[in-house]
Image 1 (cartoon, rainbow, N blue to C red):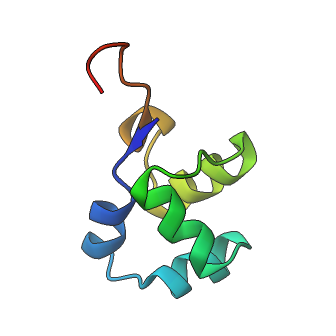
Image 2: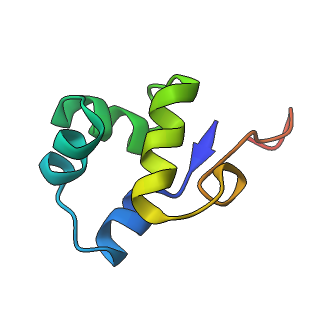
Length: 68
């Protein structure tokens, strides 16, 4: 799963810690999501999208097989 969390977080002037506190996870979880090492749960993904006031498809998407 690909995402724009790092880009959006910078645009909204949130640190990883700020975003993590707002959505109820650790800074390490946000870092792992940004690197693509961790796919968030639906609830966490929606919480992150709510922070940026964007729909899910503008923040997270699946990359097609062979294009990763």
